[in-house]
Image (cartoon, rainbow, N blue to C red; front, top):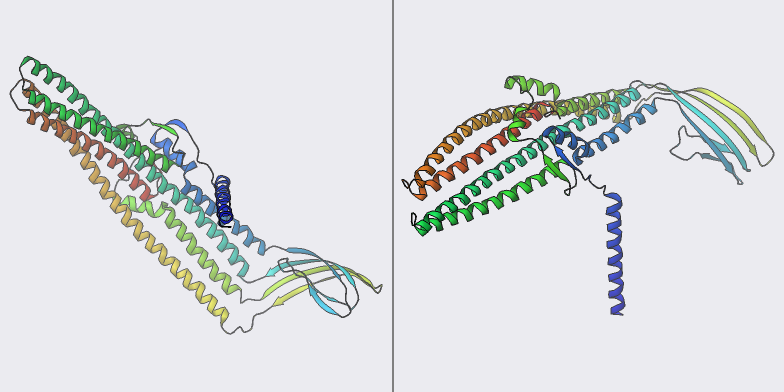
Length: 452
């Protein structure tokens, strides 16, 4: 019995695993696999099509957009057709199923009855109730559409940063390879000197140890470069098995960067005009105000035109065909304060939406100022690092000449080489940070990244 139970459990577990795999295959859309070269502009264009965050924002927009036609339909005529068939021994009242509008209510005789009804209802005057609902739905759809823009800006900034870091790691790999090449040559030179007695064996051992260290650093740099490309593929929204080649370099990417604002105040002003988050919240605030109008309109007379055609036949041989047209008007008189409470709640939400706009504007101003200061800092860092590289290259050139001429020690040459390597790496990192800072400022003011 235990074996049967155990085997059954295994079979059930296997079945569930197969079903879960089938479900993931059916519902998990595969990421695109590509093989191509990409500039930084082409990378942002690709992300706009493939990035999952942008796709999610578009789905949210589709959901919000579907609400606008639904609200508009409330202000249009509604038509329904209802068929009744009854049997019984007493008179009663029956109605059409809920969900169909307008609803039909029919008094039936004690005998069997067959009835066909067509009803029409047209809103003639509803105060601002329906118009407010329609406007609110439209503005909520607008706000959702701005959400796509916000997602695109975030993704473009993230892609630019990931692309920059991929370039940085590629540059650091070049630096590591250069150091390895230098050490391989120095090992060759030192070995020749040891063979001729011009250098001590300890010098060769030290050079070989330095070469081994440089080779290990190169392997780490290669790994970091591969990881950076994986991060970039993730931001692009493509399959990690894709093959991409970065066509930009740090220098070319910086030379094709879009123009930056002339001043921080200009950047803040542009952000207030362009940031989708502010525009979305403003649209939401207007939608909340439309909700206030809708709530106020619900207390106005509600006037609808109506018309219906009935054709019926009863079991006792009777029957008739006729029509009815008219106007139905409802005037709310007293509801215990529920309506005024609804208006107060709508006004409170509208007030909160205005506060949300002010909070977002303050947050964006802070983001722009921070991004502006960071950009200025990174510009200074590039200038400083460029000067350091020039000095370090010259210092190493002289140290290498002195060492190979027997006028300085190995430790002096190695120290000078280490400084040259550090300076070259720092320059690459500072250029990458400058690219990221530019992307961050562009995102903070609501401007697209570099063109393709």
